Amino acid sequence: MTDLAAGCDLPEFREMGIPAIRLLQGVLYADEEGTWDILLANEAELTDYFARIGLVVVIDRGEGLAYLKQISDDARMAGYERLPRLFRRTPLGYEATLLCVLLRDEYRRFEDEDLDNERCVVEVETLFDGWKSLFPAESDEIQLRKRLHGSLKKLEELKYVAKFESENEEWEVRKILKARLPLEELEHLRDRLVAAEQE
Image (tube, rainbow, N blue to C red):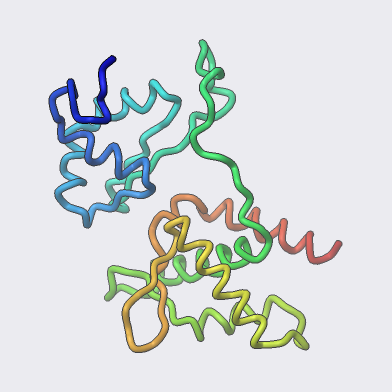
């Protein structure tokens, strides 16, 4: 029996394995220069490799990010419908979705108005002002802050935000949020949230 786990009979090492693993872990950004360069140099082979297991490699050179997404159900034909899904569809939940809408608005504002900075960084206090406006005026602020931090942590796990080191508590809104939540989807989410409030 061949024991690959023990390091025997491994195929020859290829650098394309580095961005392949990073993509499986989540989002790959262009600021990871070495890995990003390997990704671009092996784009065709990586695209073919992941297509064989039902995944699409999305590379956005303009935004400087790459990620994997599942082939849509209507494209899963000729046997591909038999492949198990790698990415589970897990709903964000109401409050995390609310936060996504707020953060996507912040990112849009950053793109339209902030011409000096490369990163969209938001102070928690600024975010909290928008957050508490989405809840009844009599809501307990301490509880609202806890719920905001809980939602931030959830989005951090999805790589949508990253804690920004600074004196004030700040979070960077990552470009993947823009990719996953385009403006038309933002409007759709807003409509759904408004409808949910009215029920």
